Image 1 (cartoon, rainbow, N blue to C red):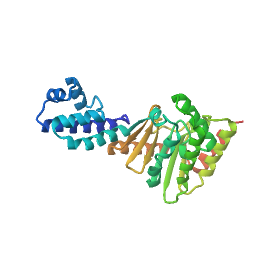
Image 2 (image 1 turned 120 degrees about the vertical axis):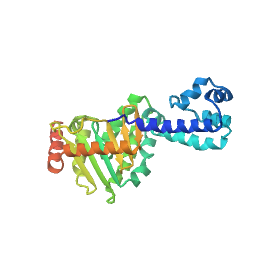
Image 3 (image 1 turned 90 degrees about the vertical axis):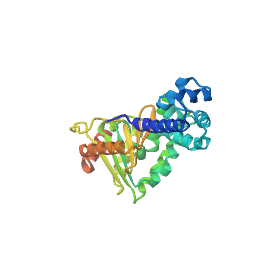
Image 4 (image 1 turned 90 degrees about the horizontal axis):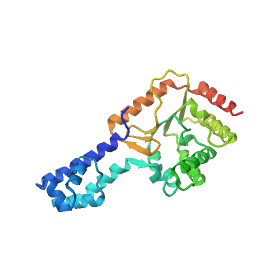
Amino acid sequence: MSSPSSSVQEARKVLADRLRHVRQDAGLTGRDLAIRCGWNPSKASRIENAKTRPSDQDIRDWCRACGFEDQAPDLISASRTADSMYREWRHLQRSGMVRNQTSDMPLYQRTRHMRVYCSNVIPGLLQTHGYAEALLGTIADLFETPNDAGPAATARVERSKVLHDGSKRFALLVEEDVLYYPFGDAETMAGQLGYLLTVMALPSVSLGVIPRTAARRVWTLEGFLAFDTTQVQVETLSANIIVTRPSEVVLYLRAFEGFSKMAVYGTKARALIMEAMAALG
């Protein structure tokens, strides 16, 4: 699959092209514009080739130099939109993790069909408070950000109430190994695995487990969430990347379909979960 950051780069390229058109409409060369802005000529070139992200002030200076100051607000908005597609965890969690658990609630509430694939942890929508608190605590330690794992876990569980909305559909897939990755003590893991058995009974939820022995249709990927057919969030180690380019969204949905065919459901999925519970001792 292509890098999920390509949607971000495409958005930045569109902005760069718009800035180039503003310069050309003003009848200026790149050197002319750089002189008017007091920049090194290479800076204007880097911005136009999407190699350097312009600051809000850079965009204001650019438009002022070209005599199109009225276009600056729209171009700044486009720049901020491109930036918001690549959200570094360290930045999102700089003041703690609670806000990150609540900021996407409107997206969760308006989504009718959510698809989730996880290869490393239990999906956030299915996490118990104990498991979430243990996991979020390790995340705060890794990024050296404020550790508010308890309140953040409470917010995560609150967000999960959307599972009880009968007008929505949730298709969630996990690799079998996820059932064995311990976050918290044995009691916490037992409670988490037991909760998976409970939530499987919800009419809005389809939970599949991809067995270790399944013939691979798709290789193991980073975790991702698909919101209807318009947006995918890809969770890498360093960032949460928002994919909106239709061709990329389709690719993730195709991968999810492949994972779905590899997974087991119902009685077979329950058996795998119960095996993992038994392994806790």
